[in-house]
Length: 318
Picture 1 (spheres, helix red, strand yellow):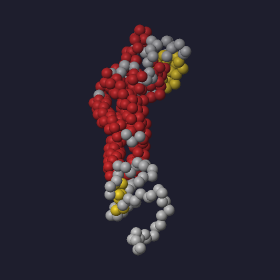
Picture 2 (cartoon, helix red, strand yellow):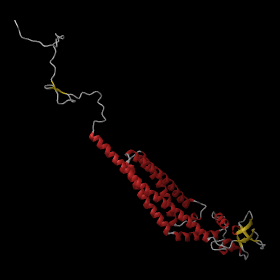
Picture 3 (cartoon, helix red, strand yellow):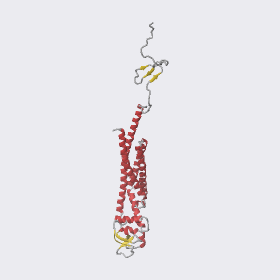
Picture 4 (spheres, one colour):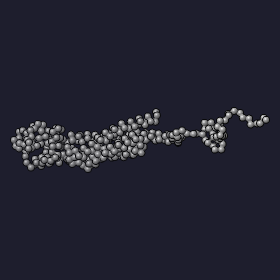
């Protein structure tokens, strides 16, 4: 395979994998932003320190991926070996950072899950006071078909229900299979209870939300880890292509250098050149026939320009 064709093929493969690398990097960046700033997620209500570190790490990895992709594209398109070296160094740093974030996430899964349980307990305790997390709890119970963290009894810890000192089964309307909440209250009670009638509901969910929240958390952790692992695999392939491209460009540069040394004047245009060496004493030597020596012609007499090229005998016969 010709060297230029090989370079073009390596460039094409490099850019294809670089595009995949960029797409995965943007996904990791989005995952980090979701962990840190999504107001509609339980993870952002009271995030743990470990979760903040994971979110910040994923976001930083995504940003670095963007920079690395730009460096790699410029280095490959313009065939700059120095940028390819920088690109390979950044890939190594990225892999180390991703290993750290992945291991941190896997080792702290149980701690993050305990923090999630504590967050749900705090939401249940302060529910009904107009907190930002109230609609989030309603959404979880309504769509997942569950009530409380471990069951409906968790709502006995709610400060509002405790202040009423009621024996009736008062629960959020999202705990009931079918309910008609009033406009001014999120609470509902059973149909056979007359007071307090904040709303009506029929048949509350008996299953708690803990297991479903745990499954949701594990799915998101595995998704983040999967994207991280896929990103590392792409980086390994990118590193291999970068090494081959770097070596191939170096080989071509060496060949071009050797060609210039072998023919240093090959590219110089001297227009019309006289390759005959002129010797003022011995005449000149024809470069095309160096074995033939030519004497300089005798200077002609300006007064006798018309001369006979025949044989002249200078002897006097008289």
